[in-house]
Length: 472
Image 1: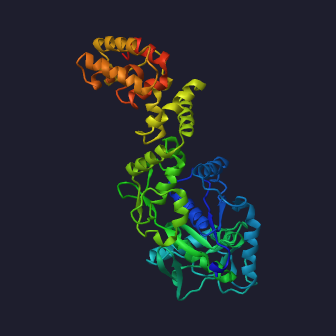
Image 2 (image 1 turned 90 degrees about the vertical axis):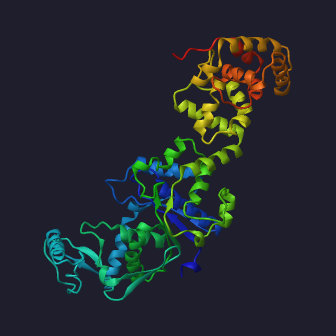
């Protein structure tokens, strides 16, 4: 049985596009299950559809998995390169009388389906070549090879998520395993590859549940061990409908570009259809310790971008400041901004503690950190422009004079500014907001005295004394 062999899971995407969020969750569950039990996680690229399989799509899949931190064991297996092995198994089944040549032409099969449709019957192969003598053939017709499926009883799929699922054998027709041109079909290739790779657990989307019934026919015919199946419910959009383009970002590369951290995506994907009590914030290390298939839910999970923002904000606050600084700089460069100077990089790292408290994404973090990179005169947003009246600018100039000889520490700067406010009968906020507008161009920022310390004396005084940049 599968449980008696070393545990092996696999992720087997088709390289026809980017790594979809549903595929990313499937990869994560396979990875976690293997890591939890000390097993092996393999990666197979199912590239048998040569017209749709693109090298750039393969690169996108590998990059997506690497960004998520899902490392696979051993070399990547490319399914197309194993076509000869798949054909070998088809001919082995043929020799054992468990498969047969089918000489039906495309026109005959089309006629068969049309007749079945007219009679209100299920459209399935009628087995017309199933019981012919081995030497019965057609000249000038290249046959396909079909497997002999049982025609009575049920095929049982014992699924760790869906429970026991039965399929009537009288509706599972003798499907093709080797086409007339000698190429193997998907059903055959998957089974052979899983066996040769030692896969013990097949964890995949429930859109493959019907495939499991067909693949069991090949497994049983070969006498191979049956893997443990776990078919995951599909993901739905926030509105409960099946995911589509109208739901927005669905590729992992899009989430990276939207400013989400890989550890946050792992946490978020984990909670899409899997739970551990009421825990929402689950580190990868904890997930490996806790993950099992018994906690996978049977109902479809919904995407919730507000929850993703919450999770990502948590991991941003937990992240190393220097790492966040590099991510901010990389984001700015992707938008065509100039390369950061060493001084700006150091200012950014120094200010990161205050910056990351409010940010939910790297994009928000970069927006909040824009003051570090701003050149004089600073552009002002609408609210800052309203705050920075001529009277406020006059006050800023006076404050600049009062702090020019103070020890440049946030606490000392605050003492002087508080004293200035008290002397003029003002609240601290009345004085702090114009300072914030002059130093950052916004009315929201990290604590303003931290900002002053980070910018340094020279830059702070120059910004307080300079005229704002008109945005008109």
